[in-house]
Length: 454
Image 1: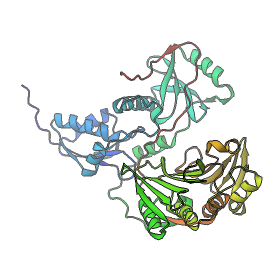
Image 2 (image 1 turned 90 degrees about the vertical axis):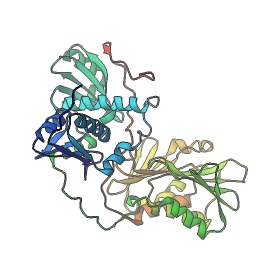
Image 3 (image 1 turned 135 degrees about the vertical axis):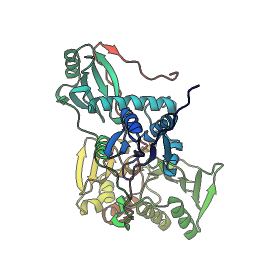
Image 4 (image 1 turned 60 degrees about the horizontal axis):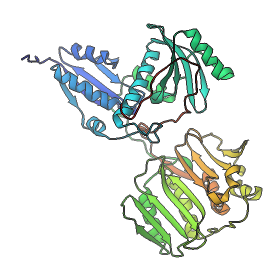
């Protein structure tokens, strides 16, 4: 039986103070060089003397840090893991709206790790990228491994990047890529994503010795305010308005609030993901009829925006609407007049009409196609804030017959309302940026996709 000799080295693992999900390792002891070599071999990056950081684009650093800690301990190195990192290691999470929902958590991690290896091969110069192109809402690219000479067609970004097809030569890969993407093709690697830029920054700057003291809340536009406590907001609304009554469902996850007329109802989902629907407000012509209109809001919707909606419901003004009347230009103009008067940019893109804030960080969209099918209660109106309408931090949707007075109040709030936002370190997102389905490529060696039985 072989006994592992203790090594005079201590490794303290902790969460990175500024970079979401990254992990730091501080090494001490006369033999600190031994775990130093092991961590570097596992792709930890040296950022200062005896300080390394593990940064990944799949946000799985706590998992791999735990694996590293187990190996270090097995080698005889003393390892300390902070309580906050242990919490991150124990956290159970998955990507919302993951495009391969049949995958188990371990299979999702396999897909992410494969994407990480592609990213590392590009970053270390092992995979030479020849060209890239935009394909819908994602990026595709073509490159060649310098060691093997194998060329690959890549689809997706960050933790969703995959090798879709392989080729025997760069020429065959480029011909196929150019045939498929034509004018959209651009030479060289694709621009770094936000995730890749953040990872690069964390690898080039040592973590601060002490976190910055908290800053006082700042006043921001209503659409950029903190989400706040939605449960407290609903409780305050019910306490102030006796004509509304709270109903608990069979599950503690949802609360319903119903007006005494039984024709206006609120559904509140308590533990929804920030980008998933947490509020549904619906109006009915009679207590037993179909919905006249419905409005939804995600869990990250700022408190001032929700407060405006609840105030409108409390006023009882404009609950009903002419269900048979079409949504015409007059209706649209009345609903968005505050935005136009505030100088929000007006655009028309096919069936969609948009109004975007001067800073480009919020907007309202009207879908003319959805408005032509009022009986289906499609999302005709969308208010959003964040990086863009297709990647919003929060979103609010309304069906065709959502009262124009309610929409006008919302527009007024977005254009002129204010709220507060607490400055703090941002946590990593658990959202997958969904791309398009990988297109058909001319005949070549296809890499098998992840299966249910893997």
